Length: 332
Image 1 (cartoon, one colour):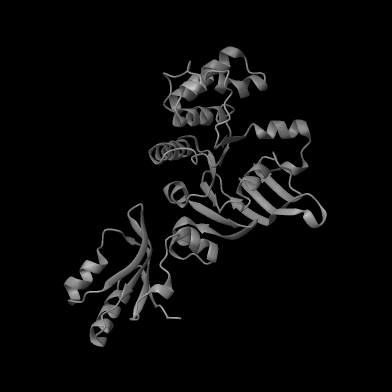
Image 2: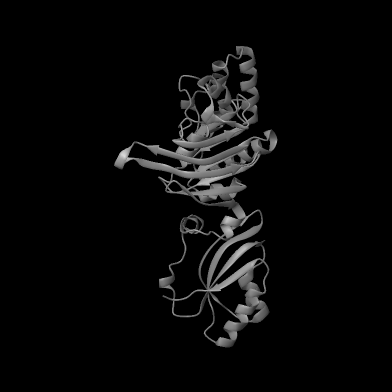
């Protein structure tokens, strides 16, 4: 569906040039929800703008629906963009138009008859749950309502791809969840491929199938969300997945192990089971775990008992649990 091949983007020239994107390679499959995450300045928004050529790459290919957008003439590119919708953090609605007319706007640009445009806009308002707000202007709507109108507008031309550039960053947590649920619904109902650009890991875990982590313009790692959450391979991956990780140099001088939950049931109470089955108590020194579709991911740091026999008993018990890996944490 979307193939990014050896993509580079440089702003400026000479010693002051900014290399925003460096040799990006991504393959986004049709019908999936793909996440791109990174810290501020990682190049996320530049990358998503290159996907529809709002920013023209310095080099490389952007292939969408089998077309290399970098090789299209202006008229061809305008036509190709009709299959690529985009929503933004700041909504970008026209303040002088009501909800209905905002959605009609892209249809007007391609010459759709007014009656057909209105019919389509009303269908989309119903789809995003705002059929009773068609006459409301942006100033009369909440942030969540404005983003729903923006999503409806992005869908007006029946796109196959929906690009979401920090689409929930300006919203409160409850509204964010409702917008993510809407995107999942649209993905399932319409089959639209969704690309989510965000700096929020909770957005990735809530909605995405696969994810790429961007760091200083480079793809640091990519893969299934479950795999990245259970085994981040890079420093930036660990920082994003475990932002509140325990500092090892602050741990007490005892035997410490790190256990990683790799997708087993999140309803199995490991520490309680250890105490009941083995009669051994351990100290939880730190934890950063999460429940994704009933499966447990993340890590936990445990301080084992000072008695060697109890420590060995606890370690063997944990090592025998499914979907859990264990390593001892060395003290520096």
